Image: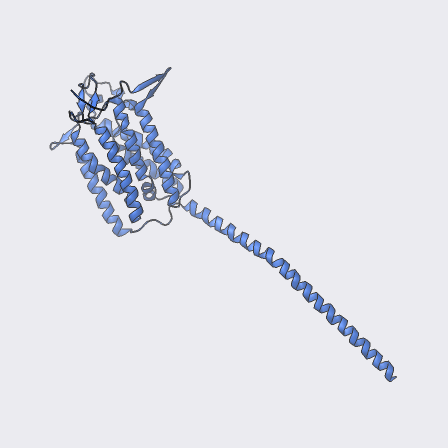
Length: 331
């Protein structure tokens, strides 16, 4: 008898009249909102302008969703294109199935397009948004809880996840791998925030640290899962993907730190122009104030000069009168 476990929701959908509200979709939407909100704060702190992260996310998010779904469908094609399966289900993203590898890869393409349109370096944008992406993943993983999917091996631990019986699963208590990954992603986000403050990471290294740290956790969490997956040399495909991407991220950090040490001084040309315009306005205002202060002094100086001229004229007139009187006396 299990004394404690994590219950799963009886359904992942709440019907609000004719409109279905899906828990998986809500988790994705909330995660995107958190990523953009926190990324905006970090971008402003780096010298960017408010709203830039959201503008670029308009490109990155749709690309990321398409990329995540493509990766899932390609790597699990048997779920949609094998005999007896309906290929139309490949488009039902609300039922779950987003591969983070594809989401990041194609999302980066969308972010590159958005950055290019605004003249912003992609690595700087990636560094700003990296912790937010990790937080978004932590929230998004709870969508798997709503769908009762991607759980681990059977266990009787107090934090075991209760799974109900259905056509594709057997009732029991299993490792809550969704929870493990959610907590790991929170740890990754905090690690990147700390490292970025401590070492002033730039030129994409904060993002690379996020990728490497996430892959390190994903490898062992993926190994615990029992859902159907392709295997290569005895390991699940996603484990190999995590290992390869981890190595690439670490190599990038090492090479980038040698070639381009430090952090970008300017991340958004528009923000620099705005700052210079503000400085110019302040200088102009100061000059105007100085001119205003100088006017009374100049007026006083002119008045003193005019007084001196009047005094000199009176003296000359007096001297002329004395000379006239002297001449009359001599006559």
